[in-house]
Length: 136
Image (cartoon, rainbow, N blue to C red):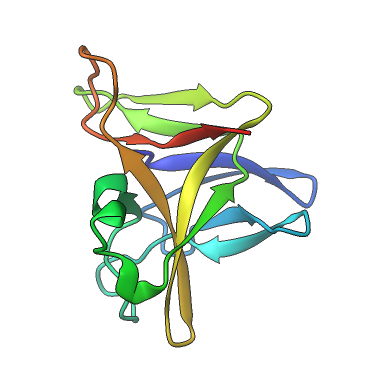
């Protein structure tokens, strides 16, 4: 379900995991470059946006995110982490031209980004959810 990501920010490689309450994800701006936004919301964090760090694609299409003015965005990450059924972490690299799709949600002044997830297409997938990877 994409529990961690790696990206470059100000010339440094950053590795961040969702449980970290300071976790931010790089969101590509239309004018170029990227901005760092808070990755979802954890239990105990203030705010009114949904708990968690992920948005199921089917729930977006069903309109469940509409009240938070969802905007699709590209996440500028170079790799992401998934755990297998044994709890072992595995890192997956993205190639040039690939992005993880994100969703920016808003409630008043609060703004957070969520990783969009899909059901894996592989019949023998060991993960229930997978980040939606788009190619540009």
